[in-house]
Amino acid sequence: MKNRGKWNTVLDIVLFLVMLAVFCIKGQYHESLAYTVGALVALHIGLHWKQFTVMIKKNIGNKNVILDILMFLAMLALFIIEGGVHETLAWTIGLLSLVHIVWHWKQFKIMYCQLLPDTYYRYLVGALTVVLLAAVLTAPTYLTIGKTGHGHGGPSPGFAAGGPRGHH
Image (cartoon, rainbow, N blue to C red; front, side, top):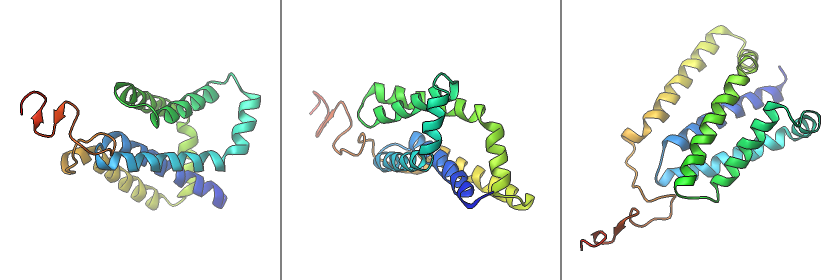
């Protein structure tokens, strides 16, 4: 495996973990993690730009191209839409990401084995990844985060400075 291929695999893994963190962690860290996902997606597209343009030109009706375009547009929309639609888009991206992983599972396995040819390290990194996944998925139980929306500060929706609206 070429060095660039290894970096692409690492980028894919990091992107997946940060996307999962954005999905699970709300409050003050959510927006920072979301911008990190945006930067990683931009980097991913930049590194694969030639491949994307060829893929789109040759396979415009292909299910993978349609899936990639839908995921990209939904991610862009997340940065400008708030409220219930924002959450719906987040769930949609989560589901589309799972479909993406299922459709590319064989390729992911091959890339992972090429990245870590030694079986010992494959199991070690796999175990560490499971621990990281568990940490991210359980983060809401141990992180004390105020529910202030997307980093805009202020009281929670429906609450005024003195308590619930109408109850001062």
